[in-house]
Amino acid sequence: MTIMQIILLGASAFFAFKIYEHMQGLQDPQEQENSAPQKEQINIDALVDEADKAYDAGHLLEARELLQKAHDADSTIPELANRLGFVMSQMGNHADALKLYIHSLSLKEEDITHLAMASELRAMKRFEEAEEHYKRAIALDPEYEVSYFNYANLLVDMDRISEAKTMYEKALELNPDLTAAKEELEHLNAR
Image (cartoon, rainbow, N blue to C red; front, top):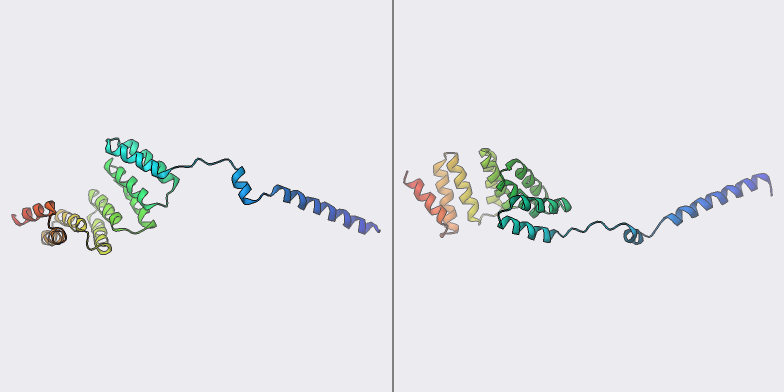
């Protein structure tokens, strides 16, 4: 054996040993999951249930904290963003509520989220933006009378009375028992 062959044999043995060490450090992915410290499992449904109870009891701060924890655990659930946005709105935090509704819409476009956004924008006196969301909500679900009723209320705020009357009438066409729409329409007709 020449010196060169001995050197190559030594180098091969060294690299073989390093590969062996590396392979010993690797685990089956399932083994890695089992050996890793268990991350706290968060039961989102339980948090939402507790938040509902807190909200019903008038404890908005507690409801917000519980929903925030659930949302932090899984921010890909549009309904969580909507619920948290609603509580934020009830607490007077319209800007953060609006951000949550925008996030929810980025996950899934729903008429109810557009209605919530429109409501926030209306509260912030951003009427033209609110109108766009009412229109989108109606386009997504043209059979939901509440969209027409709320849009009519916005139109009254914008002093577009004849259009508001049309929206109240449409709401009543869809649900003749919608007392609030009847009352608002009567009020406008009495002007």
